[in-house]
Length: 300
Image (tube, rainbow, N blue to C red; front, side, top):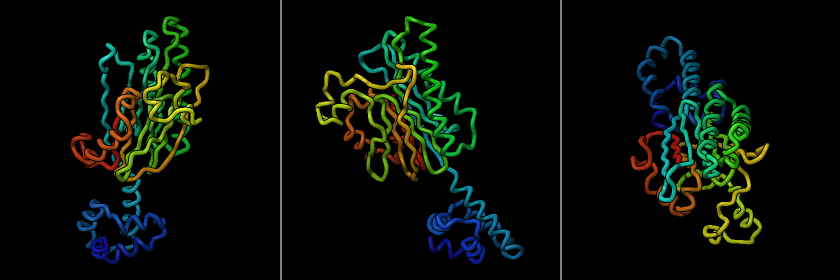
């Protein structure tokens, strides 16, 4: 990076001294210059350097600011009905245009769990489609609104269709903002993040076995084969109100997020998921494009 900075000469020096940039942005400028900025400089620098270096400094500041606020995503999703059932109660969506990922796993079997999961996903898309340029606080409230609105809609559906009583869903909502994310979670679906070679579960199951693990009654290994491992303590549509777990955090270049239902984690443990990520992330085997900064896998 030092070689590139030196090639920018006086305009780059003015840019680094400019009050338009924060300290962190100046660090970014020194360490990871955009190839687009470099190309633009090579094309116009000689003219701007002679005519108005101060104006060029301001333009470069704004360009770099815009560049660092731009995040590229690749979304990839897959759902499988499995070997036991004839219908799939899972539903998911990945919307790069909304910076939104959603996974919902229906419950209720004959009570139309697939309807509940579809209502949830459609509610999330509808709510996020009405907003642009969201702040972190606004996104946080939107995620909360998705769970509350979907909960009400599922209950309203049951009132109109009594035969569907007992239906509901678990759900994950992941919404991205500039340099960060907001996550909402209910039930035993999960969200993982793979960063710098390490897999981390960002959510905690709202389930009976997880509660027993927290109390020290059983071990995680015993929970995998526990007869009540599918008993969940919190779901969307199960009560008049729902309390989602909400989390916000920062994103880094190269982060990979995995949203999945228990259909994956019941069959594949965290060590196996880690192994798959370690051997596939950043290659064409994992997602259609390996050149993006953020990669989000969705498994339902």
